Image (cartoon, rainbow, N blue to C red; front, side, top):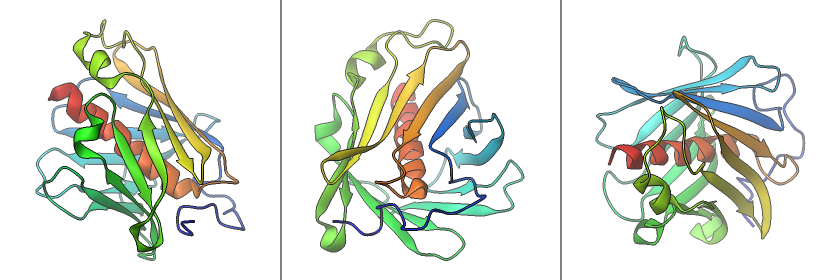
Length: 206
C-alpha cells in the first residue's frame, strides 16, 4: 500500500486541509489561464490555483489565497508530452512527496482515468471519471450549465477515498469534493481532484 497518499495518523489542525468536503469553482470562460477557487464548508476561501495556459511541462501550485504568496502544494508532471504522463504531488513547504498518479492515456478516451502509484510505482489505487466523458463533451452546455454533470472518484486499496460531483450552475463550473479522511491524505486528494478538473477543461477546449 502507498504510504504517501494514505491519511496521516494525526490530522493537521486549523489548516485548509482539515475539512471533509470542499466546493471547487472556476469561471466557465477564462482568457489568460485556468483559475480555481476552493471553498471550505463555511463558504470561506481556503485554496487558490491559477494554471497558466502556455507551459512546456505541466507544473503548478496550490496557494493559500488569491495573493499567491503562500504555496501549499506543488503538482509537477515528469514528462512534457506523452500518453501515460506521470504526475507527482509535493508539499510546497517541505518538498516532501505526497503521492503520484499516472494518466492512462488511450484508455481515457471515454472517461479520464489515472492510476495511483505507490512504492516501486506499483498501482495502489485509481482516479476515475464515472460519467461518460466522451458523450458529455459532445453535448453543448446551456449557458454554461452542463447537460450531463461530471462525476469522478478516487479509490485506494479497493475502497473509495474521495468523490467529485459537478453541480448544475449557469455561467460557472462548480464541483463538490467529499473526502474520507480516514483513507486518504487530504492534500493528495485535493491535488488529484484539481488535476482531474484541469483535464476536464482541456478537453472542453480540445
